[in-house]
Length: 609
Image (cartoon, rainbow, N blue to C red; front, side, top):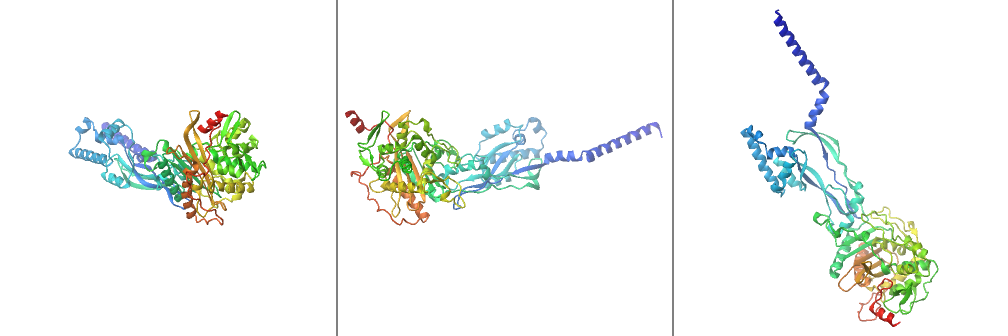
């Protein structure tokens, strides 16, 4: 063999050895790595959306549920190449390729039309982000539309399943239930505070995509999607409905700035309804802004006015400072405390504790308060939950403000006896009235249905059962003929309650002609089942007394509640009140004025002195 032939042979052998070595390296040594790299370009792990758990009322009716929707997104790098190819690319295109580009652009225009998007709005965004691999086109698209978009088969355009929250009760329960953001995370109400409980866990699946990004083969499930856990609330949807629409009508009729109300189970402390107006519809994202989002029973501060007088009377009775038949001298309805004047609208003379509550005498309540020490009175307010966290953790909840007892002066003690000088929220007021319905015990509140319901004896004792029963019977006189809220009577049932009307704070003082009206009631008295506390802020049609404004609302809503829960009538009931003649001598509810603020008649009398 010639030397040249040997050289060629060795070269050929060297080439074969090199090829063999390369094949061994690629197919054996680098097989796993190269397979992995190939999979990265074809095999994908996709997230599978998981629905949140349902929110249900106490009877299992839906207040919030997740419905399937679609999310449309695109790969800007892929789509931009089809929308605006470079001259170098188009120069080498075949006729078939040009036809595919035209077909894509026609489909793109159809996509814009279906999704009601403008080309000048979307296309520049795609081209500006053509180095990126992800961009939302539209979220929360109906599944029917998503299926049509899939059929377009546009390279780089994808449709994935997601979930959208729907609220069947709409604005009726919007404040309490809350709502989610576009990523399905709770950002208000129950949706927010129980977000971790409600949210599902996304699943994962492995698929193979072609070079245009379309899924061409399902490989396997890596992790199944886990549905969120359901939540059973204490709320009764029917009561919520009645209360919302009755408050909304009241707000419109009296042109009030706002109205709010809470209904509690008088035995367990469960929240049966919580309403705030003006409201909003959580299904309409355009409404999810502004003042209407405030859940006012927990977010708004109120000076409670005369609704706190029963607690002062109860504490004085419990401490033995007064008796049910004690006589309190209120004279001409005026007293001075530290240079400030406390007044009643009328001169009542001598009053018993029951009559002080019935006629809502500020002077009488102040004199009873002075039989207590500041620490005793403060402790009473503290024990019933004023200026404390309710434990419900509702977003935006305020605790209010109650000055420490060591800082109280005589004026603080007297003015707080008729609801000035401190503030609370309406939920705290409703909870405080549990001591009268629950043998002197305060129960923790709950927005979750309790199974089994807590025993009434499980609450914390604040006053003796005898005192609680005595004051509850005194509060019947407020709703009876001659009281300040006969409009709250319910035929066949004994009702107890207390009205309150306070001046609104304004500019560091109090507005002369702007009010908040309040009423807290318990029904039925023999075996209390419901507590309802309501406030109406800044009514502007001339009616602002708590009894006249809120009494009819209490009567209509509680009548429905008693019917729905089939509560039997009281064994002994008082006769139904006759319609009140505005011109007769029926007592008018006292307006709890801040100390030193007098009516024009009071000013004349004071000058005469």
